[in-house]
Image 1 (cartoon, rainbow, N blue to C red):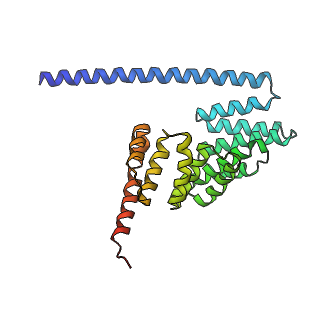
Image 2 (tube, rainbow, N blue to C red):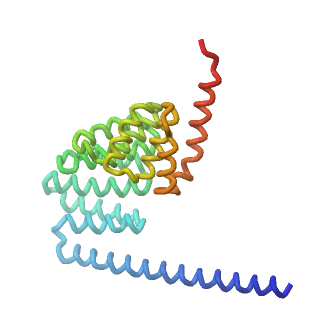
Length: 246
């Protein structure tokens, strides 16, 4: 009993020490974030006619998950700069769209991203529209905007991976594989792309083990999360094998 009691005490002491370290780390991160926000607020106060200052502060507030303040700030900025050029308005709208996307208010985000005409922001807007529709599980609409983004960013691995993911969700495995191959040419260590390319390979009867091995090594979390998807694919393959041949 004495040994067990000592073990429990040691375990409790270790847990308390870990908790103290975690609290200290969190407090340090919060202090750092507050200092950064304070500096950005000062920039806004010093130069209230520079719309970039509002955008930067809002972006930081989004990182801090303070969506309400970020929304309020950008709504205020849109009012302040309502007589400015379309590029200024579009930048602030893009920032507000990102706030809504981060807050999982996808319909509000979509409405704003669709209003953006500035050519410098168009590809980014298409990407965000695609991501917003993907978050709503509307892969057909997401595909339209992902392909629009790709016309401006043909070799962008993030865009090609997004197209591959939409095609995979829609069951177009062969086409999805083509886009994952584009991704893997520039990012051969991309764990997510390797895993999904492995799924495509399974369905197409190709060698898939190397893809999964690389995915497990490079992105173990995504590999673990993808196990249900893997089981679903295996079931589909087995069902197709068991079907009587005509």
